[in-house]
Amino acid sequence: AYAISAYWLGMALSRMLCSLRSYHPGKMLCLCFTVIAVLFVLLPVQNNSTAAILLCGLVGISYGPVWSTLVSSAAAQFPEQSAQCRLFPYSYRSLSGNGL
Image 1 (cartoon, rainbow, N blue to C red):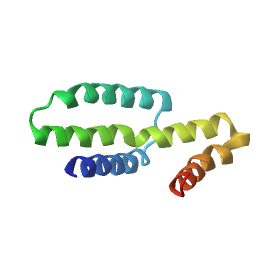
Image 2 (image 1 turned 180 degrees about the vertical axis):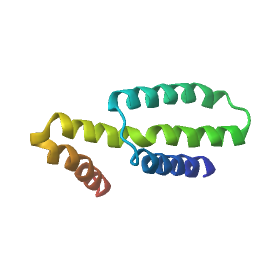
Image 3 (image 1 turned 30 degrees about the vertical axis):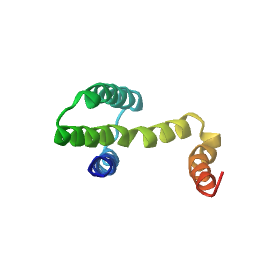
Image 4 (image 1 turned 135 degrees about the vertical axis):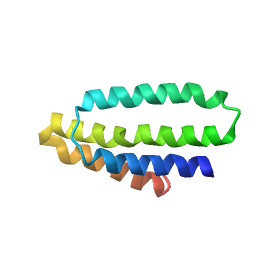
């Protein structure tokens, strides 16, 4: 339970902090995915539960800006379909939560 809480806390904090600054989307995604790959290599070899929980928090911090960056990049690349880019993930989650 602590690991899941650390993950979501890290994700919420990083989304909030990344929304305060503008950044180059490609560089941010490369940085996030590189950090995530390193953390996924380190996580299974941890013997200490406290270190594993901290690594889960860092994974959440690294994943935080990914989703919003992908959606905003898609909306910028396809402005005529920006409503579809932003609406699909929410409608998909709503449908999948209702028994699909």
